[in-house]
Amino acid sequence: MKTIKIKNPFVDGPVSLGFIAESIQKHSSKTQIGGHSIFLGQVRNDKKEGKEVTAIEFTAYQEMAIQKLVQIREEIFVKYNLECMHVYHSLGKIKKGGICLFVFTSSKHRKPAIKACDEMVERIKKEIPIWGKEIYNDDTHTWKENIYE
Amino acid sequence: MKTIKIKNPFVDGPVSLGFIAESIQKHSSKTQIGGHSIFLGQVRNDKKEGKEVTAIEFTAYQEMAIQKLVQIREEIFVKYNLECMHVYHSLGKIKKGGICLFVFTSSKHRKPAIKACDEMVERIKKEIPIWGKEIYNDDTHTWKENIYE
Amino acid sequence: MKKIKIFGNLTDVFKTNEYVFKEEINTVSELKEKLVIQFPELASSKFLIVVNNEYINDKKIIESDAEIALLPPYSGG
Amino acid sequence: MKKIKIFGNLTDVFKTNEYVFKEEINTVSELKEKLVIQFPELASSKFLIVVNNEYINDKKIIESDAEIALLPPYSGG
Image (cartoon, rainbow over all chains, first blue to last red; front, side, top):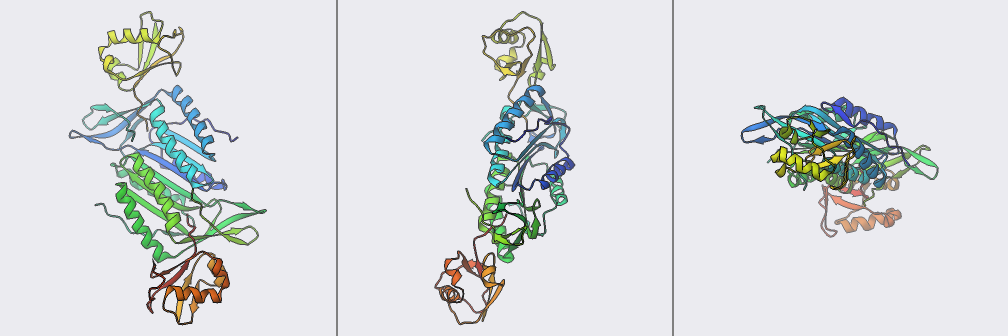
């Protein structure tokens, strides 16, 4: 069985481009991999009643979130026989345009990587205790609600 | 209707990390985007009968490939109401571990980006006249065959 | 006395992310009842109560050193 | 005389990526027949013949200045 690294999935502030590029780079020596799937969540400047979102402030029930993430990651890793899987989520205030979620899956063939990435994103949104506070340009806020189709 | 840029999707040699990072970077100002989905195809060192793939050499019927790519990209762009879509494929010899396909889709919400990326990768493999010659460590070769599940 | 971790929109109701609950309670259902008396808005709020990171039966006794948290619907990602 | 573009594993059969076809032909089916005589391996090969980037009816006349290409199954990505 492959080892699943238990790293802290939380990042203070936005996930940086350098970090994403470095993560991809590290996989070029893993020549058993044929496909990578990446999802990046970006803070959108939603508009409501004449005002607009300038940032989202994320908080998490960290201890529980990490425990759940490790468990879900293990399930998906085994289900899709992945070669690699990395998950990072921002905490704190992320301005519009900033990357707040980075899911990165790799497998021998493309399909498992793509399906695993999709499933991980869905499960993070549904099952991980993280909350987003949408901050508007007039300093009011609403609480983000996730939509499932 | 959104404009669909008709760029040359072919890259000589592997798709570089700098290029991928730059592509992501460019989207941070597009604050109407909420999710990006990326697929990266990587040359795998497949092993067959005691020898192993050290590189894949890609050739394309370029004129026809570009015409088809533009058409498929337009279909998917409209179908999923995307904000952005970029597709790059390598030509020439790509060593194991090198990135040979880069598909990058962006939309307001996550699901359309993820589905569009998946569909684009499938259609590239099935419908675009590109061929991969798998070169082994003993200088023999076989021709790559795409698998559809 | 119990400290309760508060998250998401409930921090607007409690005006804190760690609420000190002074009354004596034994179960999750008792806790819920008493919280609703103190904060009537909770009656119309959607949230889960977890104890030591787990959803537990409403009737189960909450141990004295347990960590309690109120979790409104998640909205990460 | 027609130049035919050759791709993928067929380049191993033709030993070139542009084959000069000297016989007189009018349709795709005629072209196929004559190519198989010259290269018997083609009988067991999977490929499409496209004319000006399009799959055309076997019976349709190939115009004299048309671009012809033999395409084995694609394997990009």
